[in-house]
Image (cartoon, rainbow, N blue to C red):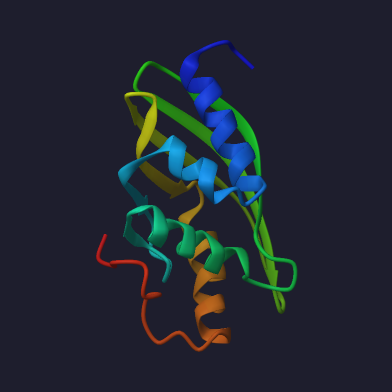
Length: 149
């Protein structure tokens, strides 16, 4: 890990997320944080505020038999951004998600202001997330996500 303040911020955030430490995440995130989910999956859209983001992450974390697991492969940082390359894995019935995502965090005042997640292989991600919607009986986008991106 490099000794850059935003590298430390991202590592603290990832550690808190892995431990479901919502209190620490709230300290690391701006009060008006926004998470933008790109792609064509049913989970696309924009989630506003820490409470709704934590609900969203909890919801997608319950997908499939073992939940959604993400492994950070690489982190790049600058004075106002951090970019992470993550590998996500989840299983639901005969559908398997093994996909890379790029997650970009905009940082201001040593707090994360905005997060944008983008699937590297959008077709693969869309197919898997569409199957989760069908299995879970979701007729539209989950209520925490404002669709239309």
